[in-house]
Image (cartoon, rainbow over all chains, first blue to last red; front, side):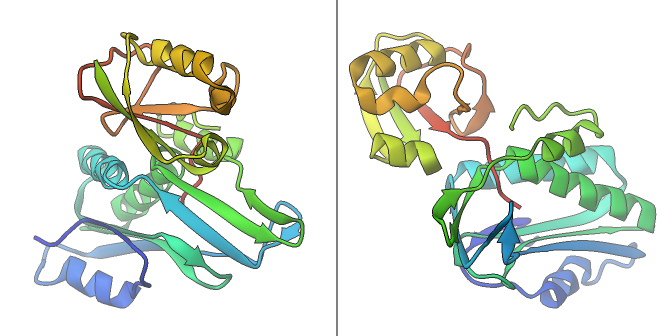
Length: 157
Length: 82
């Protein structure tokens, strides 16, 4: 059994991660994945770079708990979450979620659930460099609403 | 009792430290927050009504939660990962 959660500075390769996730698992008929990347623009300003901070220990525990909850809710076989920290530039990959299941429906749902959960419950914080100087990214009400559709109150933003 | 307090992101910057050990008489997280607010101006960012989230022993929590000796408490702004 390989790690379900990795918090790392280095980049990741979705192909390698998916190969490992579904390796030798003949039950799998569907793999759904999501990648989040750094945009060059946010809230009306250009973004030249982004620093990602996290709470070591709690971040891993929080995401492990989210994956446990995804297994409770959906008929899935495997899940993998990789999230980068440190200094990132536009075009860089930030986060990936991959889920395996027998059928696509459960894999789509579990992948979206994990991302919605992660956005408001995993302790990460982004600081952007803009022409107006550095600024901490504000939490979005829409991210709380995204988690609410799964019946979970985010209470984040 | 003795507690470890951690601060993250904008709150870490405002307070000027990432963590501290503290002897507290407070029994809840809310009490600890009030105690810090009364200690020094650097803790003003924790005042009630500001966007502060809390964790106890690395689990998202509420301020009503009871502290225990040796516990780890954290104060941080709303999270923005993903």
